[in-house]
Length: 149
Image 1: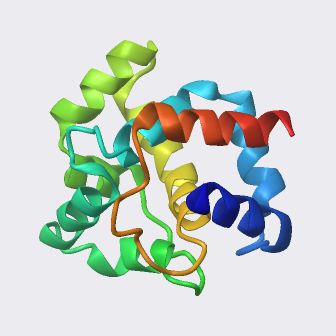
Image 2: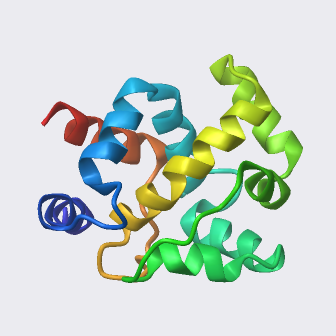
């Protein structure tokens, strides 16, 4: 439960960049499809290889500084929906958007507003856990529990 304890500790003590936990969780609670999409990107069982794979995709796409800011302890750099689409690829986003019943551009835009905060909350010590974050289902359960609490 080390990761869950870390996330809960970060949740209760850390507010970053004006949005803070309340804003992030409020947005995710109002749009649960974003929670599902975010966890599907970050889980070890994702097509991208979890958080580590996502970081590599950002680095390959020339946006390593952006994703590094989300993991690190400083302020989270913003990302646009277009940048996120470029890194993830339109096929990956269109597949997720189709499953969730939303427009691809809308999904990219919404994910760009929540993904930095979600990554930040799952890496409260400024490091990617060596074993990754767990499966998408594990992450969904952790974030779902936070939304209820």
